[in-house]
Image (cartoon, rainbow, N blue to C red; front, top):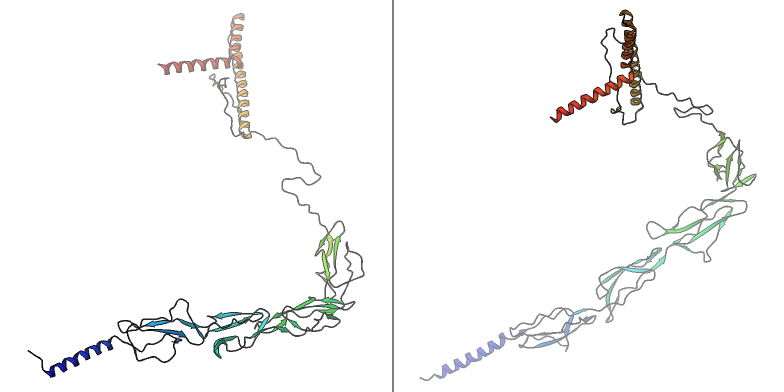
Length: 416
């Protein structure tokens, strides 16, 4: 089945349109160049570029390529230009220099940037402190000349009466300058001999740090201090600032400053002291005898003596148990004198009580002997025996023997 001539023409037109449409869809339109760049070959941009086209670029005047960034753009098969970041930057302006100053604010020194200057201490800025980097006659430079820093001046120092200062050879005074004043003969300088030029609070002007001194005739008479004397060289009068010292005679005390100076008002500063009679204190510590008196003799302590018991009238006698050699008398471990005194009193009381008992027994025996007659020899022997048995030594021996027997019996009973 063949095609008609009309059908062949339609097919041809369709193929041509298809080819043209594919060609238009793959082209890149006019590109947007990166900032501060242009075509290296010059000329103007076309409306479209075929796929794979690479355009070489260059930086415009006042700018330079960034190292490492390719200065070109390419048309991709998608019909779009490849993304190309900024590859041009402003050229650097020459580094400005200001004597006695410095840059205090700056982002960079390249085209379009600004810098701000400040002066060192003691200087003030003359001119505009801010500059901008701009393009001049095809090259980058600052929009104006940098400022300069001027040393802050002070006015000429004031003059004084009866004195003078050492002037500067150029008669110019600025921050840090100092002048020294001197007085004429026979005049004393009152105040600081030198003044210095300093910066004011606004930082733009200078001023002297203090008032100039004065030159005055100052004399102080030699002082007279009763009951005292001066330890310095004798002079009838003294000039300003001269110092003298004082000392009191023996038996006197100095009241006030021992050293004074001649002041600006022809008076001594601080005031002249005085010498007053020294008062000897007679106060003594409690318990101590006054000087020149002997200390009173020490009085020994008196220990209390227990009362002496009186023996009863009946024959029944209560015989105290005297301490034996095996018994120990308790003592006060603290060594107190009171405890020792009590122990001695107890011993003395025991001895006195024993003597009284012995005397009482002897008296009773003698009375019975007088009332009852007995044969001469037997009676004498019996009385002698009774007396011997009641003697303190035998009585103590019997008491010890009885105590020992009692202890032996108790030990046997405890053993059983």
